[in-house]
Length: 116
Length: 110
Image: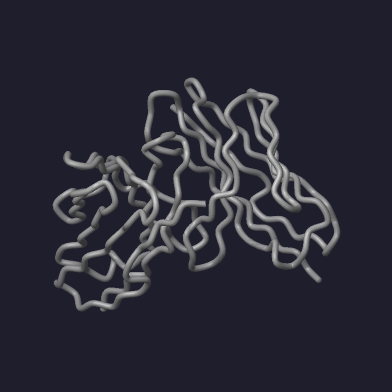
């Protein structure tokens, strides 16, 4: 299957700082990428959908000023958690939708964010 | 509103004991139904996409089937390494995002 690389896999940051997470599709073009948050033993919660070259669409209840998403190219999307607080600690996962088919979505390895 | 319900929430089997996981869905026109496997602390791993009722796909000990209302993931003679959470998701026609179920946590005891 296609490869989506997410970096970093783990990050610890101080409260009030910002953290950037990268998501790259390595061997295919992804017009659309998704960002999810996952709580322990829970399913994936969609945070936002990003389309290359345009503004991200955020799900209801997700603060767009806190979770900045940029999708500058067909292979890279970034999620920046700004002014992080302990309650932002979570597992964040990105997914990339194959441009060719629009029906195959592949996931990154996930990023464990801990805010201290 | 598009909705996906997976059952059971958790399932324990003995090695070699075959069973099925269920994914019931309601969607305003199905574009695709997806099955993923997720190991703890990892991102979901793509297994199958099914597009229309009657379609079946197989991979090793797993077989996915699809009807107009539900999908089944059949696991035949499972091994301990099949232990994981299995996620089902649907994508509606004209939509980009996938709607996920809550997952089934499968444990295979040796």
